[in-house]
Amino acid sequence: MTMDNNADAGNERYAALDLGSNSFHLLLAEFRDQRMVRLHTDRAMVRLAEGLDSERNLAPDVAERALEALRRFAPVIRGLPADNVRIVGTNTLRIASTQADGFLEAAEAILGAPIEIISGIEEARLIYSGVMAAAEGPPRLRCVVDIGGGSTEFVRGVESPRQLQSVNVGCVAFNRRFFDSGKIDLGKRNSFTRARRAAQAELQELRHMADEALVIGASGTIKSVARVLNDGELLPIHRRDLDKLADRVANCKTVAAIDLPHLEPQRRPVFAAGLAILHGIFRELDIEVMHVSPFAIREGIVHDLAGRAHGGDRRADTISNLMEKGEIDRNQAKRVANTALQFFGQLNPHSVTSQRRMLRWAADLHEIGLALSHSNFRKLGAFMIEHADMAGFSRSEQENLAYLVRNQRGDIKAVQEHYGFHPNNDLLLCLRLACIVHRDHMDRPIDGLALSADGPGYRLEIPSDWLYDNPAIEDLLELEVECWAEKNIKLTLGGS
Image (cartoon, rainbow, N blue to C red):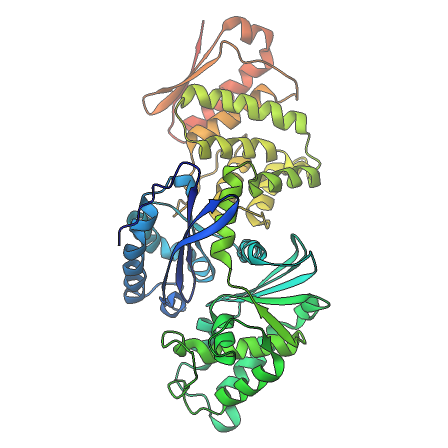
């Protein structure tokens, strides 16, 4: 398929690709007068979660099935600017971790764009953003539910999320757990009933999520149930109708025997599992009616991309919030950031925006651990960044940020690289030098200092009068040379 991705100058096009545990979804959209218009959608029922074994390895046949779908999607994505494309991996790729590196590298080669593995909380935030894009009426309390292949997301909020939850309950995972034999009615051990009860057990702590809220469902399972119950339309799901449908499916002998109107053949293999989860949600959260949204995570990603392009990057807000909560000295963060970026501009005058942005964020957060400990602030700060729910960030972005914060001074820790995490020595050196220059929290211009590449290493030219005015810094720079030498990287100090 060939797509014309060269939109009119006034219309910006964006692509979102959701690599879900059950299906892959592609959305190409553009904004016309600040309104999102869907130009092209595509879907592949890959059932990625089926291919994950007990050791988190992805089966070769499932991986190839997924790559074949991506080859179909690739032409739509390749014609767009890199900043207008976002590809996210959810539950199965989160679980697979480094075991999926080979698949992710092959997928990136096909798509020509990196894949971001996002947390369940970030997934929930994007889902809520997508659902809100289609929401009508005045602001009110909403509870959004999205049943995926490997996890189910819950979000409670008004204009923006107030509570976000991700539970490891999904239609593909439950299908393997309860319906792997293909049988449903096993007499006293009815698979459907067991699956519904298991879902309820996982949801006990979330009973409050739907209280006094308009409940909205999104994505495949919920949309499939709505169409079955409402003659093919995405109309609300009522509890009395859902109870009847649940009884009907529970009384089927096998999954293959499920015969329902408006149920897509591709959805049938996991329909019983998804329905059991939805029935459990209705019971445990005491829901009487669930409205159905036509939008979900793909639309949320597109709106997020458009926000980034026009100064509304959610990640910048997250950094600012962390700085406030961590009681970070903003003046120190600013002086370190400006100096680090000045060094980086000398070293890489044609660097990409994402690298400069990463360096600034690392400088903004480099002292976040001080709120907890003075002696271990780098280690604690890195831990906080890597494991926090940072809205807008992918796992790899958080891991790279954490690496920079952890290694801002002292010995440079050896790490194992993997897909999405490749420590950048240029960024690290510039941050470390900036921290040395401003170790005493004082403004200090670096006019006359020049950082450059020197073969496989680096060279820092320092005017002798600058060193004379800052004698303590000379000792710190000599120690810096030793730290890089331990990594077999030469840092040369020159004077004039």
